[in-house]
Image (cartoon, rainbow, N blue to C red; front, side):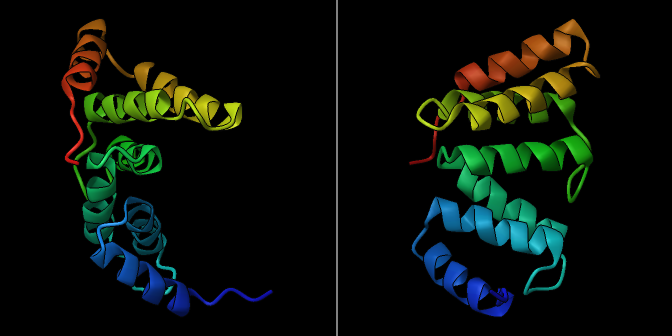
Length: 132
C-alpha cells in the first residue's frame, strides 16, 4: 500500500481545526519530517505543544524530543525531562512498550542533567495542568 502524505495532511488539518490532540501530534510529525509538507520545525513545535498542553501523551513525548534535540527550540533538558515524565504518567492505559519508551526517554535525558535540574523538571511536571 502506497502512502499518500498529501491526503494524510489534508485530513490531519481538518482534525487540527477541531482541536484534535492526536491529529496535532500527527501533523506535527509531518512537519518535523517533511512528509506531505515542507519540513518546518517551528510548525512542528507549535503543533506538538498544542497536543501536549491538552494532555496527549504522544504529543508530550514528541515535544520532549524537540526540547531534547533542540529542533525548533533551544535544547532544554529540563523541559524535555518534564514532558517525558508527563508522557510516562499519561500512558498508564497503553501497552507497557509505550510506557517503557517514555521512561527510557526521560532516563536518557536525565544522564545529561544535574540533580537540581532533575528536581526542577519533576517540580514543573508536578505543577503542570492540561489546557483542557
